Image (cartoon, rainbow, N blue to C red; front, side, top):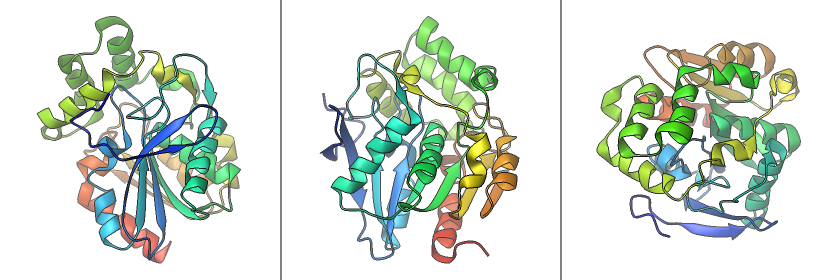
Length: 278
């Protein structure tokens, strides 16, 4: 099924019956950037990063924006559970297929946990990390107490997916409600209609906090001070545990830094990629 609200890109077989859908832009003269999106009803790479990857592509980077297994146009398993290691391996297989042996990895929320796992499992592959409120830094029980997570679970298992219930979740996702446009709700809703309700539990996100000190590549991390999905205390964990990192805690910002502060995110990310940490 083609979802009209989200453009269709390319596909790659990453093994074990999984096909990953992705968009690609840019020449790659200055490097390759892999974008890894978060979870939730209707999530896709394009939906998360459509305001970011074209900017970096215009500045000479080859940008690759996939849909994680279970999301967007990628394969949606009806059953089974997958670890962060499993999903990180799928992303590596995608890069192998695209002949990429070194990449900058940008990840938000669940995608941040996947990005961290890639840096831990494939240090020779991951050149730099850009994280936005990454998951995998708390016990599961902590996340389940977050207002946004509770609302999302309620929609999935009690209220059901509709444009109205999705809009309620997004009012918790973003501090600036003017960013919750009809277009955003429509593109997410159409994708959500293709997903199994148990999709959010398909990928098992473990607590990676104790392994953060193993990450040796440069890390730039953004966190919204008003995040209702991933507690902003995670910002200090990145700052104190990742030895080569810079972390920015942003006031009046929710879970989607790259959407609410698009220009800030794009410019600081470009500066970081060009100059590393100063």
